Every structure is written in C-alpha cells, then in structure tokens.
Length: 112
Image (cartoon, rainbow, N blue to C red):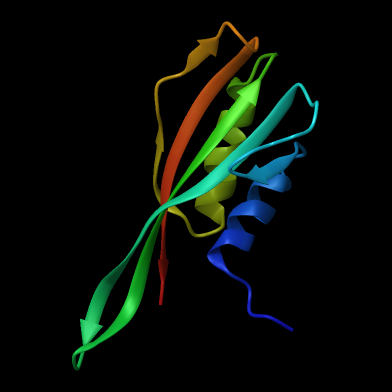
C-alpha cells in the first residue's frame, strides 16, 4: 500500500466537510465545491548536510452559490486539526460570470 501524501491529506480533510473536492479543477455541477493546489514545496530543515523536513504550501478555493461562512470556519478547524498551520482566509469575491462566491484559503504543512 502506498504511503499517504500531503495531497491525499488535504483532499481527505476537505472532503470530510461534505462537499466535492478536486485538485485544480472541478468539473461537476455542485452549488458548493472546493479545489486545491500545491503552491510551493521547499526544504525547510537540514542536519548533517541533508534535508530532514519539507514545508508544503497549499491553496484551497471554496466556491459556493449559497452562504459559505460556516464552511470556511469548518475548513479552518479541520485543516488545523489535521496538522496544517499558518491558515489564512483571503479576500472573498463574487464572480458575476458564474454566480459563485469564491473564498481562497492558504495553509502550510511540515513533512518530516
């Protein structure tokens, strides 16, 4: 069995919120969904000239045609509980062409 990845942890953590979750692009028709992407991965700690930890920086985007505030708060709590940190909720927007409200979240994970 393959070792779980940070990607799979992001996806399973967000999917537990009860909405569809997809990497980069969602192709379904749900009124609320989440996409996510890896923004940056970098070595973060070294010992004896070897990297011993990698920091992963992710972005998740919540899209909803209805009230999304509770989902944003649930996502923050779930990510924190799963070991993510530095969770930031960025400026919300309304997309006239799609009718979706859009809220980006950014967060980090340290892989040791």
